[in-house]
Image 1 (cartoon, rainbow, N blue to C red):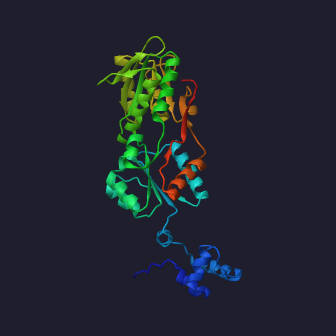
Image 2 (cartoon, rainbow, N blue to C red; image 1 turned 135 degrees about the horizontal axis):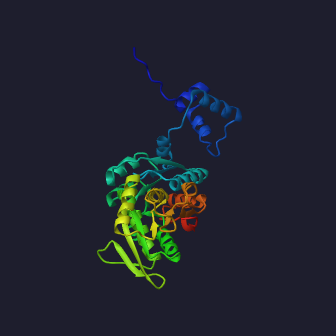
Image 3 (tube, helix red, strand yellow; image 1 turned 30 degrees about the vertical axis):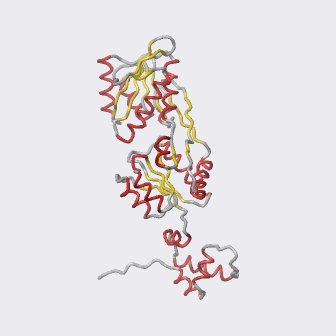
Length: 350
């Protein structure tokens, strides 16, 4: 015995059931301005549409109108943190109020033309994607399909070369605030953690550069550490790679105990810093008496830990303002460069 899958209702089905033309159905369901249709007819058409479970086809509507209300956000191939989740939630709401829908897509590992083809197939008005997923050929394919490209994490120089809009976080400024804070509280041997995972490593390296800048340290050529004069005495900033696991944190703390314990640590973000705090406490190291510790993002975890974690919070601008600028880029076919977060130190106990 075979079952026949029901066919989705169309405007033709609605027209037949309501006893009107398909044009009338289209005018009613799309609230077409200037269409002189009696209210009784409008009510009948909407009632039949609800009865049949009619849902408009987004792709068909895009083909008919020549435009799309879809903004496609291509997720990065990493676990999404609270900061990103909150930003996307607020951005989705802001775009919805302007008549657009934010759709999160992925993660997938394809890039360049292959990825661009799959994105373009959904006929969005704009694609927001990480720099690592974009190539000149892929961007050109999207441009020919009249799809705006907003690159995440792209440098200003590369953005100018590719001719794309950008959405960036000031990772350097975040690290700079952390480095300056550690030096001001007397730290002279600072360890800065860089995640081992590919996607996060680039962000970690920008934060490391910021820590060095905030500590008044110049990076030595070919060296993993920087040396400089912070507030009258020598300051060093050393890089340490770490994976997001308790084992990797314990291994790194073991290395510090063997080679020399830093007096200040920037842990890349709050999750990495939380793992390090646990490993330091397990090893009998007192925080902050022996080692000061700073995280980033200021998630709820900071207040759950003991001692409570000092962190650098990224304060976001009004999400409606960000949404408006994205819509302006779509409608005006213009480039926009968005950096809607400002780093702010939140000092606690570590």
